[in-house]
Amino acid sequence: MRFSKMFIPTLREAPADAEAISHILMLRAGYVRQLAAGLYIFLPLGWRVLGKINAILKEEMESIDAQEISMPILHPAEIWQQTGRWDIIGGEMFRLKDRTDREFCLGMTHEEIMTWLASREIRSYRDLPQVWYQIQTKLRDEARPKSGILRTREFIMKDSYSFDADDEGLDKNYQLHAEAYHRIFNRCGLQFMQVESDPGMMGGGYSHEFMAPSPAGEDEIALCSGCGYSANVELALSVPAENEIYDWPLEEVHTPEKRTVKEVSTFLKLTPAHFIKSILVISDQGPVLALVRGDQELHEKKMSKVIGSHRPAQKTEVKEILGVEAGFIGPSGREIRMIADPCLKKGVFVTGANKQHYHLKGVRADKDFTAEWHDIHIARAGDLCAVCGKPLQVSRVIEIGNIFKLGTKYSSALNAVFLDANGQEKPIIMGSYGIGPARIAAAAIEQNFDKDGIIWPKSIAPFDVELMPLNMNDALTVKTAEALYKELKANKIDVLMDDREERAGVKFKDADLIGIPTQIVIGEKTLKEGLVEIKDRRTKETVKVTIGEVINRVK
RNA sequence: CGGGGCGUAGCGCAGUUUGGUAGCGCGCACGGUUCGGGACCGUGAGGUCGGAGGUUCAAAUCCUCUCGCCCCGACCA
Image 1: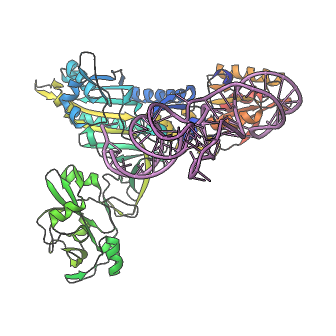
Image 2 (image 1 turned 135 degrees about the vertical axis):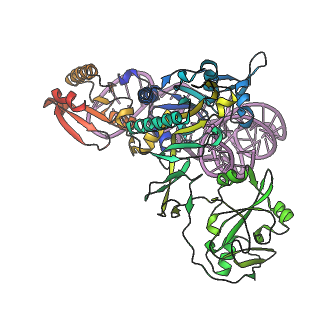
Image 3 (image 1 turned 30 degrees about the horizontal axis):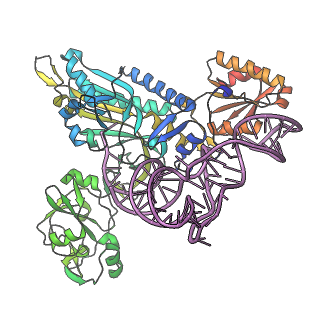
């Protein structure tokens, strides 16, 4: 490809409303343009990158016998109604009507439609297993699109779905996908890890996420360097570092106007870890008191797993329900449902006395209060691994893929059944598996850039090499460039030749910004010695080679 | 949905406090000189100041409403 013929609108300055590095660089280097919040146009360079990523996805999907198909984006409401998700999913689903008033939605994922197809076509265990995939646009009315291409309202996803006769089959397809995903992300040059995750609205009981470490990410994961335990902090189990235990007798202490853990702990000259933090929440079944250690935060998702959907109580509700102001509530002597973090089992604590301006010192679990015990705190760096006891690290990550064991949730709802070898009718056992190609691209940039621009991993770069004849007015330069251009193409090397009538400086700046991993610089002076320069975009190291050597060097 | 910020030329911004005929840099077009890390000189094109309504002799500037975008939070296959 010739630069002069390709639409690569590079920008000297970054648009003001871009913040994430991948967003800024993709805009500046002419890969994407924004149409509206969460809607992006992929320009020629950006589309080439997605094409490279998709090619890898296809190869690895085919290698585990997944078959590519293509599903509509516009879905009739009835199918989503049958699985219940039409009502469960709120504003995130785009909904519309056709001219006859029939209801439709735009597909945010394809479990329903894939299962619908299976329900119509699969009859026998002999038809199983099947793995179908597509690389298809999804639409979600995101509450908050952000970080450029990382969270958008319309995006391409590779989604695959497995259909099996039994759990062993599902296990195998799940495992095959996990392995394929490892190969895919490795080939894309990403640093990543596989972690346990919360299945969320997908249902089913078992899932993993693939995470690329990056400060631009929206998720956090806990990692154990000791045993390798890794999980999204939404469900990561951790044991906070132990307290020194004081054998206080139970007594009321006067704590005038001291409400928060911070205030009371400062007042009593104790660390927050010696306190029980009591948080009243309102669930569908009524008020629940959540108890965590004073130095911890309550994790709402973990809490939701125990008591279902809920919200924090307002200050006035606390007074109404518990009869005392929020700063002085505690578990002792309460009849209300209580969920407590297990780290409170051992030790002696200070907590609200349920009496204005008083706290209770010397509170012990089981003796002074009882509760249901569940891990409900947010895992933090420095907490200990629940498996092996070594310290956990917490890091910020971009979710680039996920795999779910769905079981029979969708097949049961949509009556996707088959006859087994004994003539018994059974629901098909399913899994679903997603990867976001645009997120791979963004994560690759977030993990590979410098002050001058993008540094693409070779496998997903828009071109393999950029050929840079510096002076287009020099006949020998042009002649050499044209010959090399032809030869590179003949050797199946993707080459972008910067044949513009631009000054050398502009070409260097643009080349670094665009980030093609190898640059071949053809300069007038060096050329007189019969040499050209091969430059590594990442290290900026340059070697001078004869023209004849170029092909072997860059192959 | 809650909190905050911003909308002025393609991009980055000044001008808004104190109302008085819209400006700078980059980019773009043309001419010339340059030519290995975003050149220089000259000439020029380009603006419903996000939109609507109001106040005023006069509104980018003041008031009301509205739309859009970004950030934090809530939410999130």
